[in-house]
Length: 326
Image (cartoon, rainbow, N blue to C red):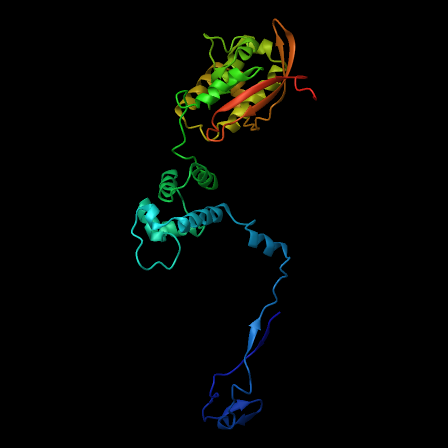
């Protein structure tokens, strides 16, 4: 509810000399002069929710902010941290706000100042990956900050490394040889880039020098895989769902599209699983194999991703019972 009363301007209110009706009679307006000191102003007030209200608490801590608002807040915070000197601009004598002005960042990015202002304000504007990349460069964002910027915008960074073995970290590729368990490294198309002898001995028909080292092609076009993997249909269906989740940001890459076209053309089963639109995360867990030499083998699978190269993954198969308790 509101509580409200009115006050009058200082010096009184002169209503003039003409008569006016009041009720059923008339009144002489010059006889009615009111002083502000007699009728003090009382401000309108609205009851406020208690500070413990969930809506207020959530609003204060930013829990209910939209992704666009989070993106705008992140960009603004880093603009305010960036000094003109760091951006290669003259400091100037008069700066009422910390860091660079919005117009200066917009000029460095080659975008409209209005558009840049709107994106800082969290308005639902369209932002291309190229525009965000220019903002990241202008704000001098670190690799982690840049990755976070693109995650907030739900866009793929055009500067992400492309597929291939040449740019895979050498330490990652060498790490598989240090593991006393089957281990291998996959690229974003799930082609093995490196593996150890134990992995080669386990996966018959996949990791020999003359084999096709792509895990999906092995799984769906090799008879050896169907004989090796226990519950092949269950594992194969899940593998496709895991790949769909893992490759969602790279489906337009030429190597990924080529792989999918080949699999859809060569495996009816893959096509059926792919069209089912199942999506699951790569969780690891129990993996069982019927090895032609060693019989039934059981492993716990774990998958690790380098912080700076999440398109690569190190997969290790730990023999069950190997961890012990001591």
